[in-house]
Amino acid sequence: LLGSLAGTVPPISFEDVEFVLTALFVTMFVDQWLSTKDHGPALIGVMSTIVCLLIFGGDLFLIPSMACIAALLVLRRKGARHE
Image (tube, rainbow, N blue to C red; front, side):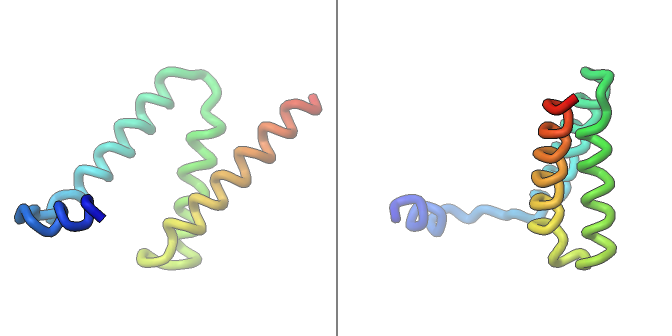
């Protein structure tokens, strides 16, 4: 309740938040790519996002892509345990 009330008081502009979040995710992707030899999780994230973007469109792809990424990473981890 306090957070909701406090959020209405200061005039905050969120115009550039989309760019900042995109830059954050690109930075995290590059850091993960360079810090490990296993690029599977990064590729799962990119490919799942692209597929969901094509299927669901730009307005609705985020939640399906996050669910797809989570499911594929869990399946990948379970497959690695059996090997």
